[in-house]
Length: 149
Length: 154
Image 1: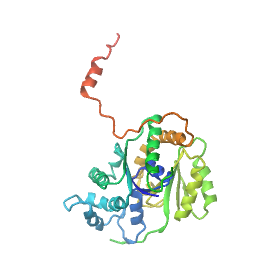
Image 2: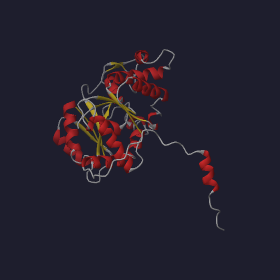
Image 3: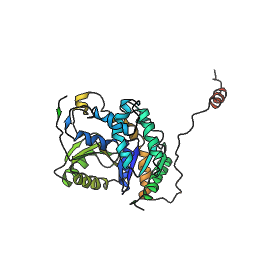
Image 4: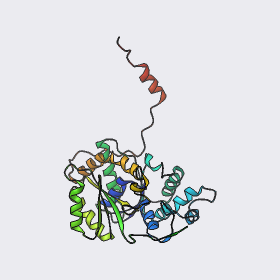
Protein backbone atom coordinates (compact mmCIF):
# COMPACT_ATOMS: atom_id res chain seq x y z
CA UNK A 1 0.00 0.00 0.00
CA UNK A 2 1.43 3.36 -1.06
CA UNK A 3 0.66 6.79 0.38
CA UNK A 4 -0.84 8.89 -2.42
CA UNK A 5 -1.21 12.66 -2.04
CA UNK A 6 -4.38 13.94 -3.68
CA UNK A 7 -4.95 17.39 -5.14
CA UNK A 8 -7.44 18.95 -4.56
CA UNK A 9 -6.85 17.85 -1.00
CA UNK A 10 -10.56 17.68 -0.20
CA UNK A 11 -11.57 15.69 -3.27
CA UNK A 12 -14.28 13.09 -2.73
CA UNK A 13 -13.60 11.43 -6.09
CA UNK A 14 -9.83 11.06 -5.61
CA UNK A 15 -10.12 9.93 -1.96
CA UNK A 16 -12.60 7.25 -2.97
CA UNK A 17 -10.66 5.95 -5.98
CA UNK A 18 -7.29 5.82 -4.19
CA UNK A 19 -8.77 3.92 -1.25
CA UNK A 20 -10.89 1.70 -3.51
CA UNK A 21 -7.79 0.55 -5.39
CA UNK A 22 -5.92 -0.36 -2.21
CA UNK A 23 -3.79 2.67 -1.34
CA UNK A 24 -3.86 5.35 1.35
CA UNK A 25 -5.12 8.78 0.22
CA UNK A 26 -3.38 11.74 1.85
CA UNK A 27 -5.74 14.71 1.97
CA UNK A 28 -6.56 17.66 4.20
CA UNK A 29 -8.90 15.71 6.46
CA UNK A 30 -6.03 13.78 8.07
CA UNK A 31 -4.27 16.93 9.28
CA UNK A 32 -7.54 18.50 10.40
CA UNK A 33 -8.48 15.33 12.31
CA UNK A 34 -5.11 15.37 14.12
CA UNK A 35 -5.78 18.92 15.31
CA UNK A 36 -9.44 18.39 16.18
CA UNK A 37 -8.54 15.35 18.30
CA UNK A 38 -5.55 16.90 20.11
CA UNK A 39 -6.02 18.72 23.42
CA UNK A 40 -4.66 22.25 23.72
CA UNK A 41 -5.99 25.76 23.34
CA UNK A 42 -9.40 26.31 21.79
CA UNK A 43 -8.90 27.83 18.32
CA UNK A 44 -12.04 27.43 16.22
CA UNK A 45 -13.00 26.65 13.54
CA UNK A 46 -10.09 24.42 12.41
CA UNK A 47 -7.93 24.31 15.56
CA UNK A 48 -5.20 26.17 13.67
CA UNK A 49 -3.19 27.84 16.44
CA UNK A 50 -0.49 30.54 16.19
CA UNK A 51 2.04 27.67 16.26
CA UNK A 52 1.03 26.47 12.79
CA UNK A 53 2.56 29.36 10.76
CA UNK A 54 5.82 28.69 12.63
CA UNK A 55 5.70 25.02 11.63
CA UNK A 56 4.97 26.16 8.06
CA UNK A 57 8.40 27.81 7.91
CA UNK A 58 9.76 24.41 6.97
CA UNK A 59 8.13 24.74 3.54
CA UNK A 60 7.67 28.50 3.03
CA UNK A 61 9.91 31.49 3.74
CA UNK A 62 9.18 33.92 6.56
CA UNK A 63 7.98 36.66 4.20
CA UNK A 64 5.29 34.34 2.84
CA UNK A 65 1.87 35.24 4.30
CA UNK A 66 0.94 33.42 7.51
CA UNK A 67 -2.14 31.98 5.80
CA UNK A 68 0.07 30.05 3.40
CA UNK A 69 2.43 28.93 6.16
CA UNK A 70 -0.48 27.86 8.39
CA UNK A 71 -1.97 25.77 5.58
CA UNK A 72 1.45 24.28 4.83
CA UNK A 73 1.59 23.03 8.43
CA UNK A 74 -1.33 20.78 7.41
CA UNK A 75 -0.23 19.83 3.89
CA UNK A 76 3.58 19.83 4.31
CA UNK A 77 3.91 16.69 6.46
CA UNK A 78 1.57 14.82 4.08
CA UNK A 79 3.68 15.85 1.06
CA UNK A 80 6.82 14.63 2.84
CA UNK A 81 5.35 11.20 3.56
CA UNK A 82 3.71 10.85 0.11
CA UNK A 83 5.09 8.22 -2.28
CA UNK A 84 3.00 9.35 -5.27
CA UNK A 85 0.50 12.06 -6.16
CA UNK A 86 -2.59 12.58 -8.29
CA UNK A 87 -3.19 16.17 -9.42
CA UNK A 88 -6.42 17.38 -11.03
CA UNK A 89 -5.36 20.45 -12.99
CA UNK A 90 -8.73 22.20 -13.37
CA UNK A 91 -9.84 21.97 -9.74
CA UNK A 92 -11.42 25.39 -9.25
CA UNK A 93 -12.97 24.14 -6.01
CA UNK A 94 -9.53 24.22 -4.37
CA UNK A 95 -9.74 28.02 -4.32
CA UNK A 96 -12.54 29.69 -2.45
CA UNK A 97 -13.75 30.42 1.06
CA UNK A 98 -11.42 27.83 2.60
CA UNK A 99 -8.78 27.45 -0.11
CA UNK A 100 -5.75 29.56 -0.97
CA UNK A 101 -4.40 29.89 -4.54
CA UNK A 102 -0.80 30.56 -3.44
CA UNK A 103 -0.81 27.55 -1.10
CA UNK A 104 -2.15 25.44 -3.97
CA UNK A 105 0.70 26.63 -6.23
CA UNK A 106 3.26 25.79 -3.54
CA UNK A 107 1.71 22.36 -2.88
CA UNK A 108 1.78 21.49 -6.61
CA UNK A 109 5.36 22.79 -6.94
CA UNK A 110 6.52 20.64 -4.00
CA UNK A 111 4.74 17.58 -5.40
CA UNK A 112 6.35 18.03 -8.83
CA UNK A 113 9.85 18.64 -7.50
CA UNK A 114 9.87 15.76 -5.04
CA UNK A 115 10.73 13.28 -7.78
CA UNK A 116 7.90 10.84 -7.11
CA UNK A 117 5.36 9.49 -9.63
CA UNK A 118 2.69 12.13 -10.38
CA UNK A 119 -0.48 11.60 -12.42
CA UNK A 120 -1.92 14.72 -14.09
CA UNK A 121 -5.61 14.74 -14.96
CA UNK A 122 -8.57 17.04 -15.49
CA UNK A 123 -12.11 16.41 -14.30
CA UNK A 124 -14.21 14.37 -16.75
CA UNK A 125 -17.02 16.15 -18.58
CA UNK A 126 -18.58 13.12 -20.31
CA UNK A 127 -19.02 9.39 -19.74
CA UNK A 128 -16.17 8.62 -22.17
CA UNK A 129 -13.87 10.93 -20.22
CA UNK A 130 -15.09 9.34 -16.97
CA UNK A 131 -14.09 5.90 -18.26
CA UNK A 132 -10.67 7.28 -19.26
CA UNK A 133 -10.29 9.09 -15.89
CA UNK A 134 -10.97 5.97 -13.82
CA UNK A 135 -8.83 3.77 -16.08
CA UNK A 136 -5.89 6.19 -15.85
CA UNK A 137 -6.07 6.29 -12.04
CA UNK A 138 -6.39 2.52 -11.81
CA UNK A 139 -3.40 1.97 -14.09
CA UNK A 140 -1.32 4.53 -12.18
CA UNK A 141 -2.19 3.02 -8.78
CA UNK A 142 -1.55 -0.54 -10.02
CA UNK A 143 2.03 0.50 -10.81
CA UNK A 144 2.73 1.65 -7.26
CA UNK A 145 4.16 -0.63 -4.55
CA UNK A 146 1.40 -2.88 -3.20
CA UNK A 147 -1.00 -1.91 -5.99
CA UNK A 148 -3.74 -4.28 -7.13
CA UNK A 149 -3.03 -5.58 -10.69
CA UNK B 1 -7.55 31.48 25.00
CA UNK B 2 -9.51 28.80 26.75
CA UNK B 3 -8.61 25.17 27.18
CA UNK B 4 -9.77 22.77 24.46
CA UNK B 5 -10.76 19.22 25.35
CA UNK B 6 -11.35 17.09 22.25
CA UNK B 7 -14.13 14.56 21.90
CA UNK B 8 -14.19 11.29 19.96
CA UNK B 9 -10.41 10.89 20.33
CA UNK B 10 -9.04 7.90 18.44
CA UNK B 11 -12.00 7.67 16.09
CA UNK B 12 -12.29 8.30 12.38
CA UNK B 13 -15.23 9.82 10.54
CA UNK B 14 -16.16 9.15 6.94
CA UNK B 15 -18.81 10.40 4.57
CA UNK B 16 -20.62 7.77 2.52
CA UNK B 17 -22.25 9.30 -0.57
CA UNK B 18 -24.91 7.38 -2.47
CA UNK B 19 -25.72 8.14 -6.09
CA UNK B 20 -27.68 4.96 -6.61
CA UNK B 21 -31.18 4.47 -7.97
CA UNK B 22 -31.55 1.22 -6.05
CA UNK B 23 -30.35 2.03 -2.53
CA UNK B 24 -31.39 4.84 -0.18
CA UNK B 25 -29.49 6.32 2.78
CA UNK B 26 -32.06 4.71 5.08
CA UNK B 27 -31.22 1.23 3.72
CA UNK B 28 -27.51 1.58 4.35
CA UNK B 29 -27.97 3.29 7.75
CA UNK B 30 -29.74 0.18 9.03
CA UNK B 31 -27.09 -2.00 7.41
CA UNK B 32 -24.29 0.04 9.03
CA UNK B 33 -25.79 -0.47 12.49
CA UNK B 34 -26.06 -4.19 11.82
CA UNK B 35 -22.40 -4.38 10.83
CA UNK B 36 -20.97 -2.36 13.76
CA UNK B 37 -23.47 -1.53 16.52
CA UNK B 38 -20.89 0.54 18.43
CA UNK B 39 -20.29 3.01 15.59
CA UNK B 40 -22.13 6.32 15.44
CA UNK B 41 -24.14 6.57 12.22
CA UNK B 42 -25.83 9.76 11.06
CA UNK B 43 -28.20 9.53 8.13
CA UNK B 44 -28.16 12.51 5.78
CA UNK B 45 -29.82 13.46 2.50
CA UNK B 46 -26.77 12.34 0.50
CA UNK B 47 -25.87 9.22 2.47
CA UNK B 48 -24.26 8.68 5.85
CA UNK B 49 -21.65 10.01 8.23
CA UNK B 50 -20.04 7.20 10.19
CA UNK B 51 -17.82 7.70 13.25
CA UNK B 52 -16.08 4.92 15.13
CA UNK B 53 -12.86 3.05 15.68
CA UNK B 54 -10.87 2.73 12.43
CA UNK B 55 -11.42 -1.02 12.12
CA UNK B 56 -15.19 -0.63 12.70
CA UNK B 57 -15.47 2.10 10.09
CA UNK B 58 -13.36 0.15 7.58
CA UNK B 59 -15.65 -2.86 8.06
CA UNK B 60 -18.76 -0.75 7.47
CA UNK B 61 -17.26 0.88 4.38
CA UNK B 62 -16.19 -2.41 2.85
CA UNK B 63 -19.59 -4.08 3.32
CA UNK B 64 -21.68 -1.07 2.32
CA UNK B 65 -19.62 -0.37 -0.78
CA UNK B 66 -20.22 -3.97 -1.87
CA UNK B 67 -23.98 -3.24 -2.08
CA UNK B 68 -23.50 -1.04 -5.17
CA UNK B 69 -19.77 -0.61 -5.86
CA UNK B 70 -20.08 1.82 -8.77
CA UNK B 71 -22.52 4.20 -7.04
CA UNK B 72 -21.35 4.42 -3.42
CA UNK B 73 -18.42 6.75 -2.66
CA UNK B 74 -16.47 7.26 0.54
CA UNK B 75 -14.43 10.19 1.80
CA UNK B 76 -12.55 10.92 5.04
CA UNK B 77 -13.74 13.75 7.26
CA UNK B 78 -11.70 15.61 9.88
CA UNK B 79 -14.57 16.64 12.15
CA UNK B 80 -17.08 14.34 13.87
CA UNK B 81 -20.79 14.76 12.96
CA UNK B 82 -22.57 17.69 14.55
CA UNK B 83 -19.37 19.47 15.62
CA UNK B 84 -20.50 23.03 16.54
CA UNK B 85 -17.51 24.53 14.66
CA UNK B 86 -18.62 22.97 11.39
CA UNK B 87 -22.29 21.95 11.64
CA UNK B 88 -24.64 24.25 9.73
CA UNK B 89 -27.17 23.94 12.55
CA UNK B 90 -24.88 26.31 14.49
CA UNK B 91 -23.34 28.35 11.68
CA UNK B 92 -26.22 28.87 9.28
CA UNK B 93 -25.83 28.42 5.53
CA UNK B 94 -23.97 25.61 3.88
CA UNK B 95 -21.14 23.79 5.65
CA UNK B 96 -17.83 25.04 4.17
CA UNK B 97 -16.97 21.70 2.54
CA UNK B 98 -20.41 21.39 0.96
CA UNK B 99 -19.54 23.35 -2.17
CA UNK B 100 -16.68 21.04 -3.09
CA UNK B 101 -18.90 18.00 -2.65
CA UNK B 102 -21.69 19.69 -4.58
CA UNK B 103 -19.35 20.29 -7.51
CA UNK B 104 -17.85 16.80 -7.56
CA UNK B 105 -21.27 15.18 -7.24
CA UNK B 106 -22.23 16.79 -10.57
CA UNK B 107 -19.42 14.69 -12.15
CA UNK B 108 -20.00 11.52 -10.17
CA UNK B 109 -22.17 9.90 -12.89
CA UNK B 110 -19.16 9.97 -15.22
CA UNK B 111 -17.02 8.33 -12.52
CA UNK B 112 -19.73 5.69 -11.99
CA UNK B 113 -19.58 4.90 -15.72
CA UNK B 114 -15.82 4.50 -15.41
CA UNK B 115 -16.23 2.17 -12.44
CA UNK B 116 -18.91 0.12 -14.23
CA UNK B 117 -16.55 -0.26 -17.19
CA UNK B 118 -13.81 -1.33 -14.78
CA UNK B 119 -16.04 -3.87 -13.01
CA UNK B 120 -17.67 -5.24 -16.19
CA UNK B 121 -15.39 -4.41 -19.15
CA UNK B 122 -17.25 -4.02 -22.45
CA UNK B 123 -14.11 -4.64 -24.46
CA UNK B 124 -14.28 -1.24 -26.15
CA UNK B 125 -10.93 0.59 -26.34
CA UNK B 126 -10.39 2.96 -23.42
CA UNK B 127 -9.47 6.48 -24.58
CA UNK B 128 -6.50 8.31 -23.05
CA UNK B 129 -7.39 10.65 -20.20
CA UNK B 130 -6.80 14.37 -20.69
CA UNK B 131 -4.15 15.86 -18.44
CA UNK B 132 -4.62 19.55 -19.30
CA UNK B 133 -7.76 21.70 -19.54
CA UNK B 134 -9.01 22.53 -23.03
CA UNK B 135 -7.60 25.87 -24.25
CA UNK B 136 -10.06 28.78 -24.13
CA UNK B 137 -11.91 29.73 -27.32
CA UNK B 138 -9.64 32.07 -29.39
CA UNK B 139 -11.05 35.54 -29.99
CA UNK B 140 -10.66 35.12 -33.78
CA UNK B 141 -12.78 31.97 -33.72
CA UNK B 142 -15.45 33.69 -31.61
CA UNK B 143 -15.51 36.62 -34.06
CA UNK B 144 -15.90 34.20 -36.95
CA UNK B 145 -18.80 32.43 -35.22
CA UNK B 146 -20.49 35.78 -34.59
CA UNK B 147 -20.00 36.94 -38.17
CA UNK B 148 -21.43 33.66 -39.50
CA UNK B 149 -24.65 34.06 -37.52
CA UNK B 150 -27.62 33.96 -39.82
CA UNK B 151 -29.68 37.13 -40.00
CA UNK B 152 -33.02 36.95 -38.20
CA UNK B 153 -35.96 36.30 -40.49
CA UNK B 154 -38.58 38.98 -40.25
